[in-house]
Length: 200
Image 1 (tube, one colour):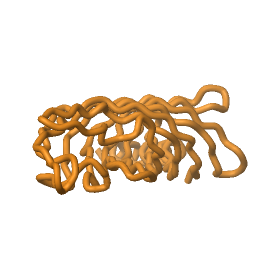
Image 2: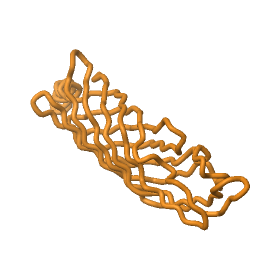
Image 3: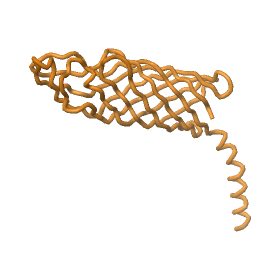
């Protein structure tokens, strides 16, 4: 019995360095562009879309690679202009494959999608809320390659789908000639970003 226990302990000790070498932690920042959902308006007045057709997006992610299995977290937000904004907080899970010096990430994504800053839209006089959250799922393929040392450069592509939708009652027009209406929030978002980070 003692012999078996010792043998198991030796085997675990020998396999520990191999397991450690097969794991890595990656910390990244990214910047790019996304095309948000087309938000439909219904009501007696007229109003422009809440979002520009293309938005700048920036954020960061952390990825733990365990021998090809990747899990992590991501956060990003849009910015610029006088339109509404989008922010996402999500978890990542999938595969990280090394292909001749290039790393391929094939990840699924799920989390919360925030629609915010509706008051920035000049067509909206009042809104029932300034922030709405929807759950989303998505896919996130990406490529990276090493620059020097731990520094890496790459690209992300992503698609996100809101799993629910929500009506946002608003008053549009001007203070003297306002009319009631509503925006329907939710839909699909696509984007592409450049990645820069470190392998630890």
